[in-house]
Length: 487
Ligand code: BG6
Image (cartoon, rainbow, N blue to C red):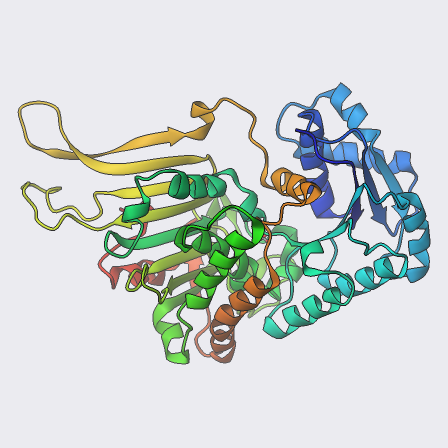
């Protein structure tokens, strides 16, 4: 069903996120007939561009970033929704023209997507409020990074809260919009099969990996002040952990889901200073190869100061102190310039209590594992041991495979498309509530602080194109296990 009528106001309209993700996603939704006919897109930027100039640059970039078939007719009708307005987000004087353009139709949803640097958020919200654009039908989407630590995140959230109610705020984490993440909820809560096993009695450990082949690219300046812990763990990895570990919500209403996620974040065991060395690994890539081509190390990338100690790889052993998960390690791992682009959640079930089969696999560890792939393809595999055909009792690992693309031959929406549609429809369940953000920062901060203080133990180097520093494997082997891809 199409969305309600809307105005989508894109702050940072000429920026990378709008060009690479937001407009291509809106185009897909348009081409699929999901956008209301009364849906307009208003891109804002500081440059004095004509609508035609703006559209020309959008088309050029969209042709690169739209992965599916580019339909010229659909593109033309999509463009008729788009307008460009010169607005300097920091100038209150520029906002009355914006308010006039939007009008005051209370039946229309107004989405203000702040695809700008977070230091502009407070000013934008104040300027919007000054022209009445904080009325109840206005929603604000906040892009990460929302701060660099708990204090700065609180500051941004306090500023924004002066002008908008919490239910008007959509803090985006695009990992929650990925198809497999929602499927994980379906698997857990729509099937009776897994839920009885989804606990410490039957699960040995959980592994969550988001690895990237790319390096920092042209984002060196931003990345060096951020690092993998803030860029990926504080948000994406912790959100995935929440979806795996949360209790079944009573329904799929926003607060029912977010209350359960919050409980998980609150139950994460805090890191004491001495735990950091034992339970975390930070790494930084050195020169190596990617896709068969030689690539430079992190410190040789553009914008990275020599001697930088920013981590491009993190592995963490997290623990959740509650009844369901006591004693079950959750291993989190992410890195740039790794061997493959991969995002997956691996649930390793416990071994059988007594071996009746002999042979090498008879006593195999982790005969049963559930692997939920988010990237590059979306699939779910359930591994188990079966008998090899023929006159033997030899066991072989095998799996049941659900490849979503093969199983459901329908178009799959990109994460941003799904989340943008949710904002227009007013569905908050897949957006982070403020208290989740606070708990996530609270958990990450001691790790950050301990690393920052330990200048004499810099990040461990790993070769670009590998699976990270050797210490990452060692982190698991202390528990007698290994990362899924190393098995
Ligand atoms: C972003 C990070 O949030 O997620 C990037 O800032 C990272 O550094 C990206 O590359 C990964 O997202 P995806 O969807 O490409 O896996």
